[in-house]
Length: 118
Image (cartoon, rainbow, N blue to C red):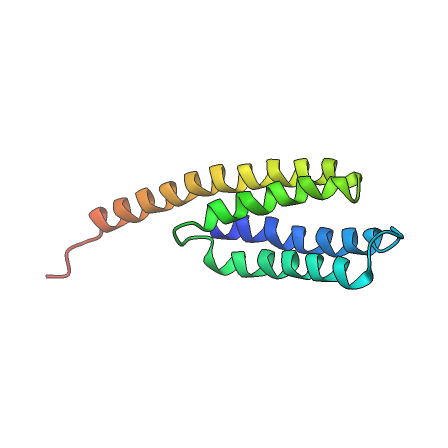
């Protein structure tokens, strides 16, 4: 699960950065505000890569997905991109867990069928 989720989060890192560049064109937003919000979101996406398997990691990932969709209020294309990344996040979590379960089953089978060294 960790690999799939981390791949999605790294993709989001770049999308958030590009959305920040687009948001800078809004005359109502200051550059400091845009880069503070974008920087925090980018930092969160990278930090989540390391804590995704810990308790609450997936929930924080979902919070980031909601924030990406909500960014559509500032950069309208983010409604679409946020929804795409939310779907990717769901798939990463869902199929990542299935892959982890299959790996555990295969490891248990390999251990059970290993010859006894004694």
